[in-house]
Amino acid sequence: MKILLAAFKQETSSFNPARMPYEMFSVLFGDELLALRGSNTEIAGALDVFDGRSDIDTVPLYSASSVSGGPVADEDLNRLMDELLTAVRNNGPADGMLMVFHGAMAGETEVDPEGHVLTEIRNILGDVPIVTTFDLHGIITDRLIEQSDIMVPFHTYPHIDMYETGQRGARNLLALLDGPVKPTVARIALPMLVRGDELITKTGRFGRAIRWCREIENSKGGLGSGVYIGNPFTDVPDLRSNVIVFTDNDPKRARDEAERIARYMWDNRHHFTAPLVSIRDAIRLAEKTDGLTVFSDAADATSSGASGDSNAILKGLFEHGYTGRALLPIVDPPAVEAAFQAGVGATLTLPIGGAIDKTRFSPVECEGYVKLLTDGAYTTGTGTSGHAGNTAVLVTDTYSIMATTRPVSIMDRKVFEARGLDPRDFDLVVCKSPNGFRVHYEEIAARIVPVDAPGSTSANLNSLPYTQCPRPMFPLDNDAEM
Image (cartoon, rainbow, N blue to C red; front, top):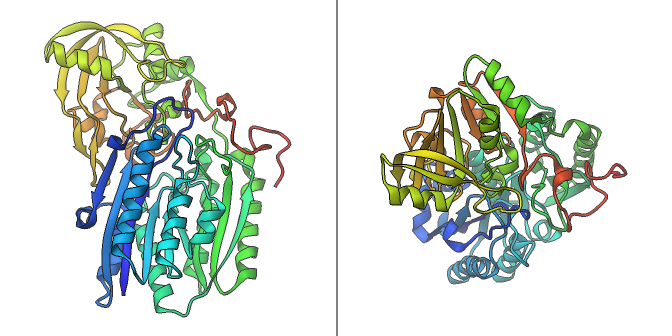
């Protein structure tokens, strides 16, 4: 049996003014996808499952994936979609396909790229089993449900089960091919956008809902099951949370299970908000802490699609006169270029921050010593390659600033360690991530503080200028109802 395998992944923040270009995507063609073996990715998990069957001919087609960012520029999105669909056409017909999505991509004008390409894939391949996998932040449209035989989402937040999700997707596809399996689906759409620590599946209330989903999948007749909480920063008409359950020829059970989980999520909605600490109070907490303090700057989280050029916390440290050793990341192409022109060992005065999201941030001028210059390449904690573009480490007072040309996810410690910056050597580290960093920092941090800073991915959702999100919607509106 011939199985096609592809990935198409990016998470968009509609409130990031920068457009995501083609060059920000890591694009792999054909057998280049085999290099992902051994990584914590859906592709690697699927390959290992398919490799265990001598009667399966796996055809890797295409993978386009990127760090989160602003909407994908129309021309570049069209190129990406054309590359994927051309690969499908050139390798069809097939007996089935596993399609790996993130689920929260948006273009400048196309608000559902995943639904578009999946519909086209269905038109090309016809009535063969197609299984899709998603990040649990995926925004689920009618097209995605209609064109997927089974949908399989992540079951962890912070996300650590990418490999396992690929395995679950692959096993569901094999079950459809081996038969007889007749998927039946129930979907409950919830008018709620969620944030906060209660989403941490290991410790928070959200974990209970996910455990129910796992129990369904592991039971007889259970297929794909998940809670898709959407990405609150992708301002599109289908933005909401969804509970989706697939069963084998049991629509009543699918509906009953989905309604039980949806009711639980809705009843706990007030817990799925993020309590935030002002920058001033956060700095005071850091000063009182014996050991490493980690600031979660979710508002400028590059992992959620923000621009990464916020200097709000840096300004706060200067204004407060913080004297501890601080490590801060910032996306600032002009500052990096100036550092490269000056060279390692030089001291220069330059503006920092506000190079991209100029409506929210303005530069702060400071004197910095150029400690290190690199090309920005590194290996992430999942085993994949990351590239921040030319990168400079600037030292000003007791602060070390990792300035990058391109946004990268500030979650695992590898991004700092690749520049010779060990977070354990500092009193304060800023992670531009809402919660994904926790699995990498909880073992070394004495305190973690969610900071109330401005930005295009702020957990204070009422601060964001929604125009497409359906209303009423919790917590934006008090009159939202399930």
